[in-house]
Length: 435
Image (cartoon, rainbow, N blue to C red; front, side, top):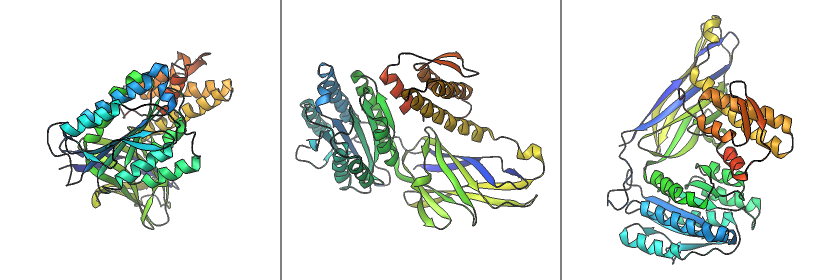
């Protein structure tokens, strides 16, 4: 059975008159059974819950490009994902065009994974053809309809597109996203460089998933296999942070800071005037995530102690005590000015993501001076944090002269996929202490 724990990292000491409390809370899951492997016949549920996996592949006309390599690779990737499904998982494959239709089961609905149904599904996928437009909202609505058949399942969707949402309005897409909130998680992937990062980010953020780029068609198979394996490892269908803060206080923000930056503040689900739930989605039995909480509280006198926040976990609807965030007022400046290592690290990681976003926006607007300053600062922050993967991505966009000072020069020619990769992966973080 999966068990959860939480640990708080903070400097609880505030100067006289201080009213802002920062803390990083590490939530960890442990001792759960690993997800069942495909074909084992092992149980695939946790606590009696079903698993549902839906794969949506773009079958629009643009997938015929590159001599048909896109659609061929999408077929192979989907078949690899089907082979990765654990036995008894309910699943479906949806083809997305300017509408949506079921590749498997051909009659619609959901099928249960076993050796026979996997073969049928792969045969159907092998015949998928690319033709038509792109209306991602209709794809999501089709998935929502299927997930609604098993509302209490551990539900996951992989969505692939190589293009922008051209055949419906932004409002229609947003409405479709809203229908799926709380029902399933969605990992969205963009193939090549002709898709819109913000569109897929909106989908993944609202549906508690991830967004990433697949630069080349031949990269799809490994990505689909990995996403499906991760989904099969999920053991707890619904986890939420339940945060209480005292009367007269104000929550400034709560955000996930590892393994990715993800703003949670706007996802608050009120429990009572002082308590909100923040959904975190499904968890595997061996997983850890970090959250940065900032609370503004009524100030106290020197020597006063106050509870600034109480963090609890809601695991499949059951509340579990977790951790306390404290405030202690002092006139000892050595205590009140001490930086907490975890808080400082993740504050820098958030600044890094902002610097990349602002730098790329300035570059696209033709403001080379601002782009150089912002991307130089990003290089400096990534270097300081030991975020080597982000440094490598930045080196595709700038020539780095000195990473310690953030001295860089903009590259004159940048591949579109490299710029998009930096943008979409800017929110990936490294844990404290990684060098």
